[in-house]
Length: 192
Image 1: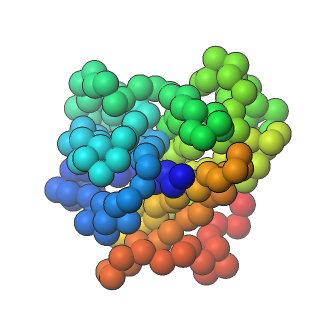
Image 2: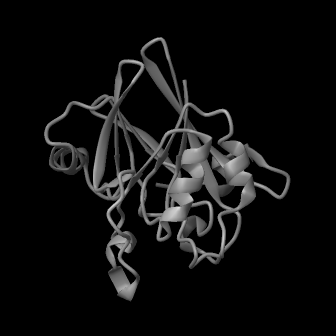
């Protein structure tokens, strides 16, 4: 099972449409998780045409800095927990990773997900791609496809979560003019 991961699209602030490379990359996915700061619900609806999609409400979706508050929608919630092939996958916008020690992350997991024991959590907010494991929970931030590392509008990153035989593996991919390529952590990664 392959799940597409995306966050912090900021459409239309970043441009009128999400890069077509992102939509193309998610063709054939079994599901898509958007970790918030969507700004325009049409992004979720367009992703949902490719595969079942759920979005976490980000601070920008709730009117921060005078932005338009996104309306209630069946595909938007502050957080979600889904069972994908026997693994519990949580989705939210803000997680204090890697800013806090692991006990702060565990408290946030409990707060966002009502004590559900997760196997994976997908989050956004920082615009910085990150993959780590804390207390047996795989924590994945796919970064931003439009404002990577909070820089100017440019081709950024997305991710994938591959689940097979009860285990999950996450990967980050960089959008390019031609499509996508594996993220080079040594060249582009932040030194957390």
